[in-house]
Amino acid sequence: MSLSQNGEKTDRKMMERRNMGGRNIAVATLSMILGLFLIHVYGDNSRVGKFSAAPYHDQMRQLQAFKASLIGRQSVSGSPISPSSSPLQEAIGPRVYHVTNYGADPTGKSDSTEALNKAIADAFQVPSEGFLMEGITNLGGPQINLEGGNYLISKPLQLVAAGAGNLMIHGGTLRASDDFPVDGYLIDLSPNSWASSTEEEIREGSSLKLNLQLTSSSSSYNYEYITLRDLMLDSNYRGGGISVINSLRTSIDNCYIAHFSTNGILVQGGHETYIRNSFLGQHITAGGDAGERNYTGTAINLMGNDNAVTDVVIFSAAIGIMASGQANTFSGVHCYNKATGFGGTGIYLKLPGLTQTRIVNSYLDYTGIVAEDPVQLHISSSFFLGDAFILLKSINGVANGVTIVDNMFSGSNKGVDIVQLEGPFTQIDQVVVDRNSAKGMNIKATVARGSVEGNSSSWTVDFNPVLLFPNLIKHVQYSLSSSRGSSFPSHALRNVSENQVVIESDLAVPANVFVTVDQA
Image 1 (cartoon, rainbow, N blue to C red):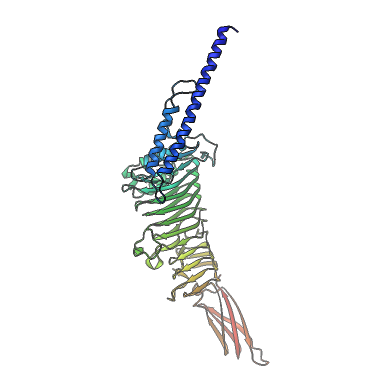
Image 2 (spheres, rainbow, N blue to C red):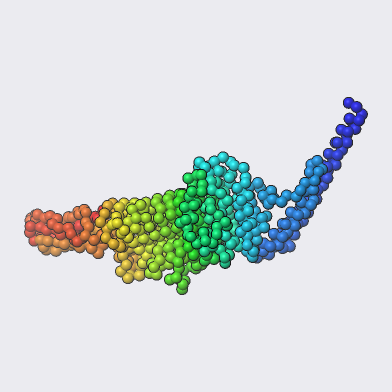
């Protein structure tokens, strides 16, 4: 090797050492300044019991600008590099999108719609991690982090395209502005963008919008495995909180949804939406509200199948839960929305002949349950307070496979029946209402027991005060016990009509007659 080649090699090594040394000094300097900066942010500006996001937001921007000026000017080879302009590249972690990096205002003073939608759009730009359901791209789990801020929005937040899944939005408050669409939703999981809708299209209503949504995705579902968690949603009495359209395995967890005028949560089409550990109310109250008679809207509207509502409190709305889809389950639900006496309903099952609903371990507080033509309905281990009752409403006269057992009812001694009928039922099979306890209300059941005694040849037991269905006894069991000497009277069941059982004997004898009847 020539001397000139050795010299060139030596010069290159020296240049690399100088560049490396410069970078090390820059990184060390940045680390020192960052430490001092964080001490300043969290030491000098922190106030116990007071949240102020604006100083933190401004200081983070200053830090990012300083970082760009210090180490963003040279590459490893020493050539200039343009400063990063994409918040996506500035995010902490590869798939956590901090919305303040996009210019969202965490103080709620200015509109953050554009910034939040840009963060959502960037989350869709990550490389695909394969597929979930056919036609649903796995985004890999990106998170839209609201950073505990309070964000004002003028249009619904929507995902940028159908056919994607595995995404989370969490950790903050969304509040509708005064010009928010009156039938929009703060978070709208549907493929058509409200942002691009005209006022005329919005006024045309949700039915046209749904038809467009259901045909816009190549998949049979719009989205899969979308998680909405740790959110407070204030609809400002303009529209609703969350809309889930034709989606699969959506999770709504630890959310507080208030001031809706339509639905707190709407689930339409799709299936397996789980709503857990959440609070919903049109008006913020803890009961005894003077304006309760004027409550409107529906807290949870389930227009789809196979959904679950678990450990949820509904504290104000005209209807707590409206279910018009099959095979839904409700557990640990506490409804004290508009009282039944004011025209409210806790849980309304509006799917005659297709109920398949289970309601367990729930608390109906002055507001009851309505079920239209119930088929395969189970209600158990629940508490009904304040004369709240269960109403079976006839549409086509069908009641089949209904089980209402092991519940507690507490009322005000006004003669209210715990289970009631509206309209005639003509097709009744496998209906069991039994083993319920009531205080201050009238027991109603499909199984009843009675007795009568006397010296007679005919005994009548009237079950009308207890039996649920009029003039319907399908099964009777009775026993006759007589204390008369050696006489052994012949006796038989002579009549079952109008919910009365008549037992007769061939001799007048002193006897006790015990009767059990069943309408199932």
